[in-house]
Length: 513
Image (cartoon, rainbow, N blue to C red; front, side):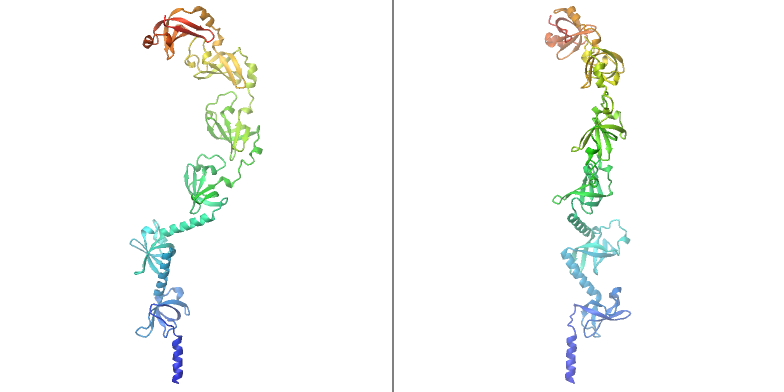
């Protein structure tokens, strides 16, 4: 009998686990009381654990959980277990591993304290300083008991304490998301993005952690003066990735590439000689840009606006938004240029100019404008001719054409020549009178001595008035330099005639008598 008892005791002792204090063991809940839970850990006695150490989802008979062995036997012979400390030890081990690996952890802020928040991380209370929280201007109700990602930035193994940073966790998540986007981006694919910033040369688009540049030239097939005409900060748009340069971290994006290029079949739509309608979209000193359709613009050069008018400022004749009918002159698909014309839709009056205005004829005209070198005169047929300053008077030296004629004045002029090909008509005013220079040559033969009045003093000589409509030039080498220094307009000097050029209509004088 003693042998049987000895055998049974041996079998019982062998069935009992070897358990040490401080060890975490598996235990099964065998009984639930109001304040306590009875746990079997395959030891000679069950352990009793306060019910407050369990989560609500853990309180179930037969459920296996981890427990810390605090004492093999207390004063009443029962093993002392702790569910809370087991969770804490397991959580701490994971905390240390995550800290060493630099991995992010989930945490739940449970209390706002001085200088920050207490955060539950795997059963461990961590401290989140306000400076590392990234919770600026966020209400407490949107923080407490909500789960966030954190990075463990410091641990104290002796005190089982940890310092957390949400700011670094957010940056790491952004970096991770950015790296993922870099790996997934493919040239030619379409991606959604948000307009982040606008500059004069384009817009920066956030593709979800990575920024790309949408250049102004890739925004629209039409001409864009400023990117703000197409996009605004905060706009959600879909863009095409044109190029990816991972070495320089640059991404080129396109918006116009999402629609067909309107210049693709341009030569079949707009052939030379075609009449089309369009809208004025830009006016510059050299011409007018006309939009024929979305993305297609042509230029009417100032020389193609009118057969007869000198157009110096197109803005005086046209306004943005004007609708015009024009004729296509030519299309350059490669340069993306279309030359347009307004005047080609009208009859060219210069075709009649050669037969209508014969050289030597006298015609009526109206003064339209002036230049330093002459006067523009409008003839009938709306054509303009020009009187050169040298053809205003046979004998009078004229510095300013306005001194002789006034704008709007009606005058008779002589036709000197017509160049229909270059659209020029030369006119003369003095030619309406006989050339007086042959008579002048007779009246003032060489060496004739005269007293004349100084009119103007120049670097090359002195202009002197001989009579009311006749001037001569005293060359600078034909007058004493001391005398020249003292002269002023209105002074009288004695001279002699040394040259009369009938063809050039000039008289040369000398003060060296």
